[in-house]
Length: 100
Image (cartoon, rainbow, N blue to C red; front, side, top):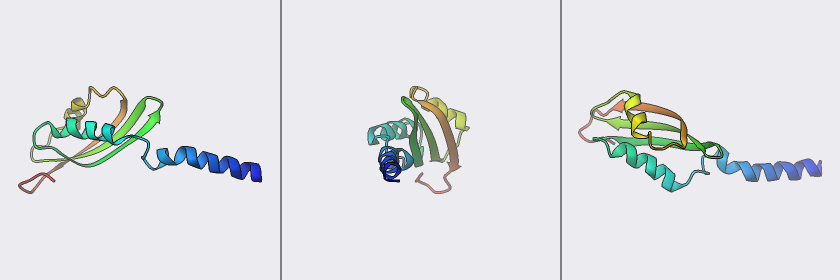
C-alpha cells in the first residue's frame, strides 16, 4: 500500500496542472485573446486553454460582440495558431453599448 500511495502522490503532482488548466502559460492565453480581440469590437469573455498532447492545445472561447459572426469566422482568426487542434467558439451578441 505504501508503494501505491507514493505512486498516487507522484501522479497527482505530475497531472494536477493539466487537470486544473494551469499548464498553459499566460503568454499563450494572451496570444489567443489578442487575435480574437484585434478584430472589430470582439471581447473574449471566457477562455479555457489546455494541453491535449505534447504540442497540441484545445480551447473554448466565448466571444461577446455587437456584430456577431459565425463561429468559423473566429476560428479563422486563430488559424495561425497551428498548436490549436480542437477549438470551440461561442458567440454572444452584446446588448449594451460596450462589449464586455
